[in-house]
Image 1 (cartoon, helix red, strand yellow):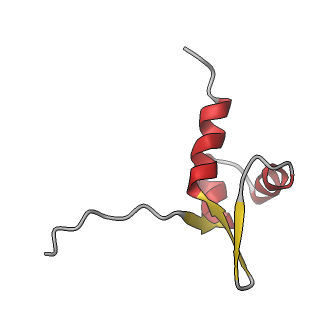
Image 2 (cartoon, rainbow, N blue to C red):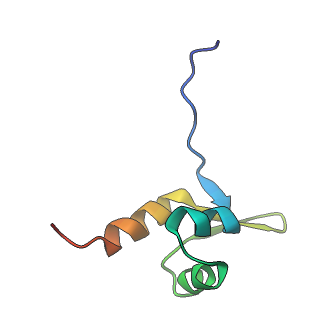
Length: 64
């Protein structure tokens, strides 16, 4: 074993991003189009940054 910590991805596929926040693809694309989620184009593939997913959840959390 190398002893290295698992690395959290910095971007994920559209379907994975939707699954992570519990919404469908249509809603995810709405969040992208309104600028609430950031995307990165890698070749022909579109990826959603995990940082923007975490930020979205933080913004939407109701204060306790």
